[in-house]
Image (cartoon, rainbow, N blue to C red):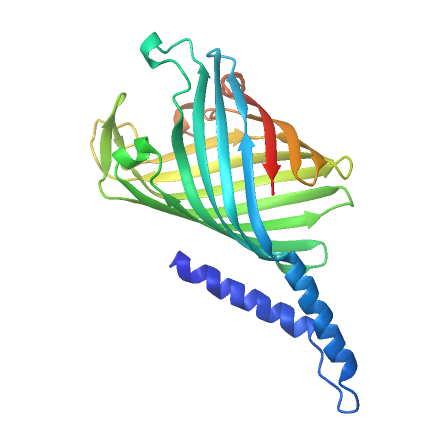
Length: 297
């Protein structure tokens, strides 16, 4: 269903853009519209390009005294300024973990999530509001999820932005997710664990541009996951589980190809994944602090 949705949205959005930009040719003169059409074609061709980037995030968990790196590589194509299709592969490495025995120390690089992404920005513009869409189809590249029986996960992001001022943007995202596994659960080191079947992700946030190069992003995110029926001993068996966390990031654009920054993401701010009680202090203390180095084509 997801794979059919993106082409449909892509066609509708480009049909809308064409209908707005194209003007009927007057019978007395066809030279100006033809010239304008050529200019539009040149602009569209200039926006089309190959996309590629590598990002490295040295990360530190203060409560555990652990250093690791959360990295990624992206390759894809930008069709127009507002539409693109890419593949992103995340991978982690260990730098220092005092809890690992000597035989397990070292970089121990491993693949995490990998996914295809289709993105349309400015799908709809109404005044200061804009609506964007992003689709993702995940592959079972992470060994832990693959061993649990993961086949894929399909996400559909709807992104609303409000341009409050020339520097401030308010954001809201709603993301339904379908999880597909070939089994209801698996046995982990902590015991039986039921696999997810459906998830809804929501986020509210703000983006503030201090200058053309320096930008701060402040999102608050909530995930609600419905788990399958698997084993009565599993803590999440046939239950909803919830996660609330924050993920502020500060970016500085050195030049069009290099960006550096700092980031942080908290642990779950809800005790036992339940709305009954929050653990703000503990969730913040167990968070991860990152440096960000990104280079793109």
